[in-house]
Figure 1: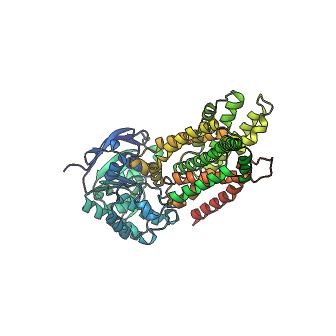
Figure 2: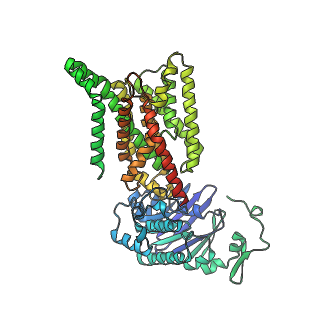
Figure 3: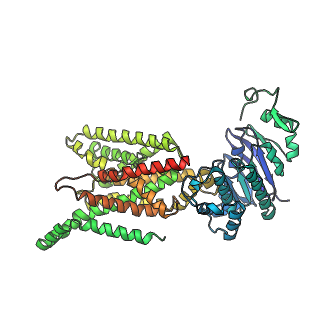
Length: 247
Length: 320
C-alpha cells in the first residue's frame, strides 16, 4: 500500500538525527520516549514547523511548498501548550483560519467533544482540560490527512482520555487519515497501532505496542522495568550522564 | 465589517470638530478676513487634524499588530519602548546630526524605534511572559527617555532642552503640511502592509507552532511586524514626539468588536486610535489660553486607569 506520509532524512541539529519514516492511511502511531528525548522535535519536523534537512510528503505532496489553505488540508498540529490568551469564542477558535469550514463537521465535533455548552465562551476563560478539547476540535476541523498531536492526553481525566482515543480511532477509520501522538503514559500505547520509541534524538524502535513494550531498549531508555503489571525504577541501569551523549 | 460604519462616522465627526474648534474665532476671522480664515484652517488646523488622526491610527494599528505578535494585550508602541526609541532617534538626528529634512528625520525615528524593538526581542523574546515583556519594555523606554533628555541637554543649541516636553509627551501644535506628509505617507504605507497580515496574525492566536504547521512563517511575520511598526511609529514620533497609551487602549477596545480576534482588530484599532487622539487634542485646546498642555498628558491621564483595569482583568483571567 502506498504510504500516506513519507519523510526522508528529516533532521534538527542537536535534537533529531536524520530520520526516515512512512505511515499508512488509518494508522495511529504513538511516540514515546523519556523527557528531552526528541518527541516534540520529531513531531515539529514531521509537521514542517522547523527543519534543518530532509523533506516530508503527505498524499504525494511536499508539505514545504504548500500554501496555508492546502497545508491545512494535509496536516494539523496540536501543541503541548494549552495557553490561549485571546478571548476568542470556542466555536470561532475551532474554525480560525480555515478557508471554508465544514459546518456539518463542526456540529459533529461540538457534540463529540461535548463543547456545545461553552461554544460561545471565550477560550481564555476555560479550564485546561476544556481548552485541550477545543484544541483537539481545532486540529480535526480542517479534515487533515495527518494529525500531529503533542501530548493530546495530558490534562485530561480518564473519561476524556478514553473518549479522545475513541474519537481519534473513529477519525482514522472513517476518514483514512493518520495520527501521530506523543505520550507519557506507556499504558496508553495499547490503543495505538504502532509505537515509535525515541531516545536522544533517534528513533530506536518502531513496532506494535506489544512488541515495543517488551524491548530491553525501552527499559534502557526510560530506566524503568516491569514487575508484574506495574512499572518500577530499574535497578542496575546507569544514569543518563553515564550513557552515550546526545547528538 | 459590521462596525465599520459607526466607527467611520465617529471618526468623521471628531475630525470635523477638530478642524472647526474653536468655532467662534474661525467665524470672527471669516467675517473680518476670509482669506486669513482659510489660511488658518489650511496652515494650522489641517496639518494638526491630519497628524492627530494619522498618528492615532498608527498607534492603534501598530499596537494591535504588536499585541497579536507578542501574544500579549499589554504590548504596544509605548510599553515596548519603540516610541521612546523613535524619539531618541529623531532627537539624535535633529539636534546632533543637524538633519532638518522631515523625511530624513522620519527615517531617524524609524531607526530608533527599530533598535528599541530589536532590543526588546533580544531581552524578552517572543511570546514572553507579561512581566518579562513589561519589565524589558519599561527599562528600554526609561533608558531611551533619559538618553533623549541627555541629548537635548547637551545639544549644541542652548534652547534644545525646552523642546523635551514635545518629544517626550507629544504635540501637534504648529506642524506644517510637509511635516504631516513626511510622517503620514511612510506611516500609511507601513500600516497598509501591516493590515495585510491580519489573517496571519489571527493564526498566531493558536501559537507560533500551529501557525507554522499551517504554512505561515512566524519568524518572518515577527520581523515584518516589528519593522513596519518601527517605520510607522518612528515617522510619526519624529514629527509629533512620543504619545503614550493610545496604542494600548485602542487595540483592547477593537478586540471587543472582533470577538477577540487579534489580527482582525488591526483596522478597527486604527479607527479607535484616531478617534482617541483627535478627542485628546480637542481636550488640549480647552486648556487656559497661552498655555500648551502636551497631548500625552491627556492620553496618559485617560490611559493609566484603563491600563490598571486591564492588568487587574488579566490577573483575574489567569487566576480563575
